[in-house]
Amino acid sequence: MRKLDELGRVVIPLEYRRQLGWQEKDDIEMILTDNSIVLKKAVDGCIFCNAAIDLVKMGNCCICRDCINRLHEAKNGDVLYAAKID
Image (cartoon, rainbow, N blue to C red; front, top):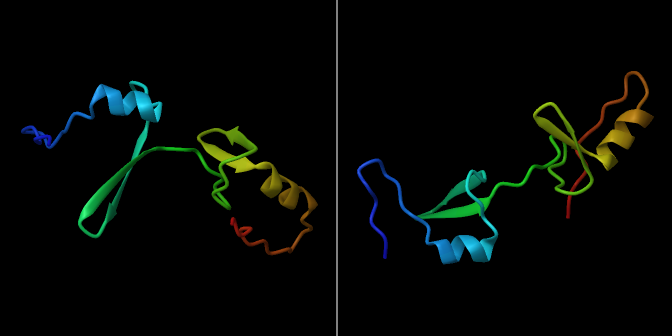
């Protein structure tokens, strides 16, 4: 059991961080679900389809190769929708 400090922080034990591969200064995503908070290492994803593989970074955004190819093949007036990721 851990206690929140006066700023609402809680320390994640070093053993847990090592097992998860978390390093100092890593971005951690917090997800509120019902009555719980899920913590996970933030992973960059494509701004269009949220894929986490084959990414190209452009500024602060990532775009996957599939979406880059779809954009490259698009013609004027085409309307593209995000590809569904399984």
